[in-house]
Image (cartoon, rainbow, N blue to C red; front, side, top):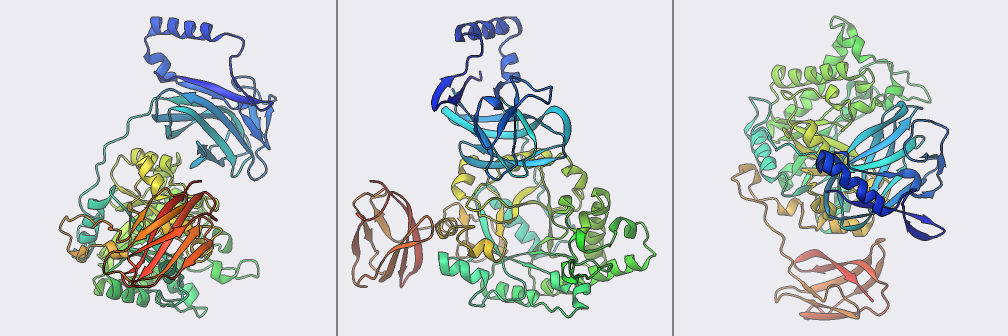
Length: 593
């Protein structure tokens, strides 16, 4: 049976919340209910924790909007970091279902949900003038003290309560065994088989490359990853944006396809492509909305719903022209036998791109047209089709259908240094789509924490970090976190792909083997590094969680054991980067004092 006790803070002192009655009276009441109706009545309704009994930071209690439960509700989520936290004791660790009571009279709002200080979801609070309830999804609680916090993202809503019940049962995975294209190429089938076999076992590390450059450029995003972590991503991402005819008309050129061919020939790594499709026409091209921003809804008057309903129009012909132009580039990859995780029309539900601006019906029709034109007309069969979705109550209306989608993806952008893994969304998507599709983090800003993916059982198929500052700026993703991610046992990088992964034979990914032994870990006074007989150490760096190099050691390359004193180090998490004739490897250590 669910058991919990609400705690709140008053003058910095914790009190058990016993409103008007004693604990003995509460237990007597619960016992009488159980006698009358059985124990499941208490479990099914769950336990309610009132938001107004929590700790406030920048928010306040109100009572003017009637219909709330308890003694009021929390409002005032209007500044960054405004939050309320409810703390409570819990009897049994495990997974539970969370519901949140709220009102959102000013339109739909999203706000961050933290469980025990871990960002687990950006919750959608749908527009409702009256107090109502949203089923957030499954959360993980610890035995003993737990906390639930709501922190402003969009803000501007009214928070009533949290209700926790036994978890809803997850659907069984029932993923199709082959791509949706019945004529898929051998390469596409082999890639699909490989991904299906490893889904849930590892996450493939991905990185988008800035369009217009080459991954071999010294300052490329992919080379940056290698320079910091000693690893290349297993998955290379790029954008076909500058192959859009309305951009070519203004002189754009792209080497994305050439670079992908070079990547695949040199490394054998995987490829994902997106397409920021500049609208075929109707680009105002003003100072405020220049032609090169024509993939945004705000920068074009192109009405996709009207165009699809008028197939004899010039605009429809231009739409087909654009698809055919992209087909030329995709055929080049097919000729090179390169399978592609193909992700067009992404983030449609947000409506900030023109392909989603006219609602789900037009977008679904466009996706199906794109699929039919590329697959059947152009006979491009090297594509696995990735649909970017959400877990909103409208997501199924936007879904193109099981006959047109191989993999479901989400795009996740969290605050800087927040390495959440969206476990609630993972579980919601699994259930919403009946376990029929593999799930991936198709685009991300902050990089998801592998430790958290393991903790929550949220093993996304792959992730792919966006370009520029998202990967290079240590104030978005710390250097230590990037090193940890690319060297984690739950993450697969380029060097760990089986040599013949395209000749898939059911062999699992090879395991990591650390060549260097470090002890003790955790450490306090010093650490001892022991090298194998054939390793010649060249440089050892100790880096803190902010990415700052705290110490660099250049050992004599004949040593096989080295001791480093730690008396000047503050307690915390550190990375040790070791360069030797065997390459670069990294280790995570904890320093305790």
